[in-house]
Length: 127
Image (cartoon, rainbow, N blue to C red; front, side, top):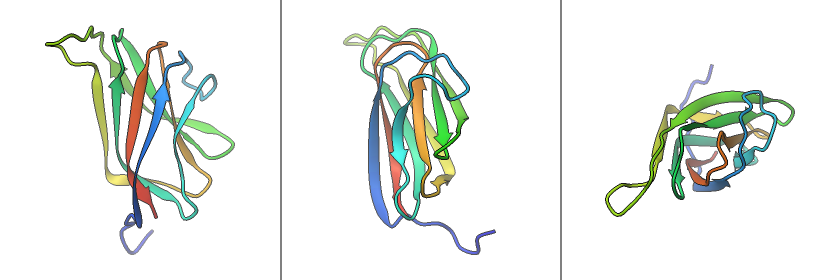
């Protein structure tokens, strides 16, 4: 167990674009890397997904990749929204209260269930 908290040494914002449909929960199929851990590891404090246009009911899935295997970390439901001047696009936020620490060689990946366009932003930094 660590005797001290893990602090970010270099703050960062990472981003990735999702658009390829992937209904798999086992880490196969099209995945996009959102964060690749830095040389001393990285910490993610929050994620934000924003649709680029109309969405249908579906899911955004986040996976941890240890360099060999992919593990489903979290599923976030996407609601059906047709944006307009009075209706905003779909947005979703995930917070990690104590930070999600990625060791060197690990990455955070994401996929969208339906073939719809999203931007995913990760806030945190390298250790």
